[in-house]
Length: 286
Ligand SMILES: [Zn+2]
Image (cartoon, rainbow, N blue to C red; front, side, top):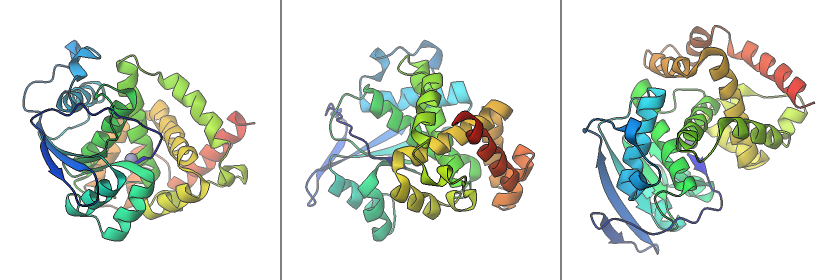
């Protein structure tokens, strides 16, 4: 998922979209996107090659696949909802989420990536808008995670969100719209606000579950919690490389459980990693 921020996205939806007016007030567009043609990331040009929603999804998928070796499935269904209410309804009818979870998610999220599905809320801006591309890249990374792990919710939740943020910033950097180094510096500024961190606690045990992650960011703020997840993932990537994160995801499919899979992938227990991160934040946030 991706937290709700002030995003105004323009309404340049292609004529090929299937439109249905919804009783909840707003519209729902269904856009099947196939990736069977060869990827052309090397020749992608921004913003010319991101002129429609379909082109934007294809372009982002090409970059994720080519730059980060993420396995993008050969097709995804993209659902675009033009209001919060229709988004909530779509999470139930298209995403098959329980109604209670859909109501909670739609309060703070603008996108959800499911198995070969992107469910996105679009309040109307061009497909090439920076925040739209960030949202598509974030949710497509979740789609790739599900392909790798052959299931949902198997990874540490902070790592799932941190990886999606990291991949999205990398796509934006490749398009000349952002810089990872700047994101890192900005994130450090935000995590200072985390109450838990100020009390020298990270509580990765809780932050590692979807429910625990949600509770934490409702309590301590979405931005700070996602930035914390980004920084911890960034730390792992700088030590082991992004390919190791992909391998971790692939190894989740073996079903050895969260603690053993983490330890095998990163050569240390979750507990030891937590202690190391606390010491790291203690130094850099002084
Ligand atoms: Zn997410």
